[in-house]
Length: 531
Image (tube, rainbow, N blue to C red):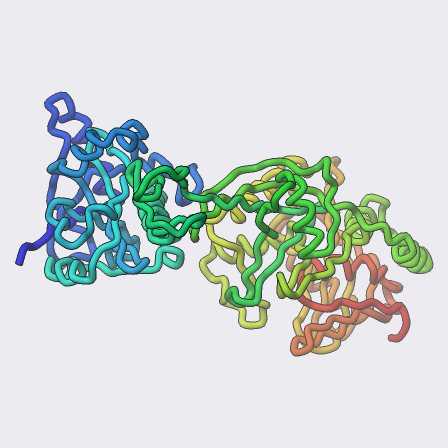
């Protein structure tokens, strides 16, 4: 039995091989085959000179193909025939919708020698993917099950995987190559017959188009389904949603397909309104980036947009009236940034057919989650509600990161970032205080803090604990009032109420706004009565 030679797209090895191949190009030695020992392999396997992901790190995942799509070859039957017969031609195998990769911590795509694999594929099923530097042709094709036995016989540690699940683990160039092969193979298989006449169809242009075998029909091309994905913001808050089939705690940007007769901007506004019941300011919609999403054939088009602020004047007036009845030392800026910014948020009205949940998240919450993730301990605190965003492979991640960067650019210089805004016990009934950490220099920098602990017998004990915790840096603490917090972790409810005989009653509405930022999954209520 013939043993097929494997060509593995191995991250770091590809860089060296590519550079060496560039040096050899004047001598027309285009195909460099070198034994490269991969960490997870007990024996060497043959590596191809396919471009690594290093050159494409800034491109969206699934887009950095690294091949010349070579339309001139597709349209030339003679050139296409020569490409198929090329001694160095590579095959990206597809087996019942699965892709072949190495079994490593950082997996790589696996290529087969087209000539050696030809007995396990139908020639008419070959789809032309493009040309590598030096003219090496790449093809994709659905393989017969017998090819699995040959791959196994090589002894290489490889596996067949679902690309949608494993694609994020691949480097960009590998993911793009496998995705293109999968998409074209799937499209050709799904269009074996004409949708108009039912006649059998055949592939032309290297599998990038189809026509009826009898001729005379119009040429059919692969369909692309455009979808809008949008990061909707309102001040320092973003609107994120989740579907019930996602992993617990996974949230992402809202998204939806473009409908017939509407512009991209119209689709953005419609989808946000349909899924979350939130109006978007049409003038604020701005294109950000796009990403191919070949599962099966989508193109994600990313936007940033601003929500229309809430027009619930009655609610705003009631909150402000309540705040005025409570003596406080808050500045207008503090009231604006805490309370009024929250009151401006339009309340989501979720379409439960589309989404399981949609809610507003504050910039500080996203920063908190990013720090936890960077510390490699996203699940270290069992009391925390699970929360995650799509990884860097997804356009949603790019949209959120871009928005966070923009907010930081327009914000004032951060001060005492190491001091968390809210530090309260997560169960029980205890005393709390609202504090202002104020700079002692001429900058006038400050930040509001909410502190509460079951260990404190008096409100002044909470203040002293906060002073000790902040003693390592610049600034002094001023107490703006106190009260009580009843925290029910089981019911996810936080009630802020009561007063302090020593520091007077805190403006609980301000405290609640800060607590909601830190606990977005909890129901936070306020009462100015009770002790």
